[in-house]
Length: 219
Figure 1: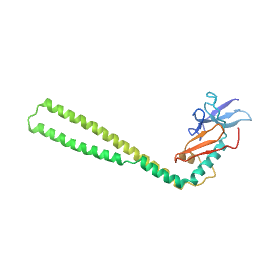
Figure 2 (figure 1 turned 45 degrees about the vertical axis):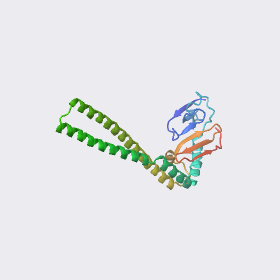
Figure 3 (figure 1 turned 180 degrees about the vertical axis):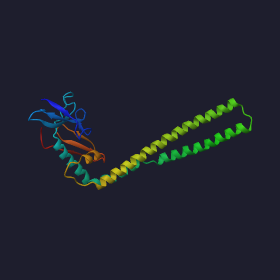
Figure 4 (figure 1 turned 90 degrees about the vertical axis):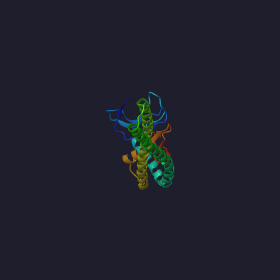
């Protein structure tokens, strides 16, 4: 049975074959004939001999609606659990202490540089020894500075994650039950959907909510 690929697929990068872990893509059965029909199928179904079934796009959309509405019905508990989990995972208090400690060390080292330079201009110094001391201090300073910059970058990344998380939470709070498939809602909320051999699909949302929806049809 011949088929061709179609790349206009809202499920691209979301729908995953349980058998081989590959994505499912949109294909055409009997392309160019009166029996032409689009299906969703594992991209490597025949190469890996996957047992996961072919899917109808409209049914997958309907199954997503059920899964999404299940999540919305339990969103209050989800939000509470998310806030608690993320507040621990994205806590920057330890980073803040490390950043403050390193910043103070660098300030002290700057004073050492000033003192070292002053000594060299006010009293006679063995330049070989002086340059060695300066180079050693400079090397330590650069390493600590690099460490500080790394910590600041890490904190900024966490702050960015916190901002994204807050946006996600606010969007989830405003979430309502839906009756029609919305690609934006699908992409924003769904992390992945795993297609099982019995044609059911496990929907895993970014919120941490997970549910398995059974299919009603066969292709």
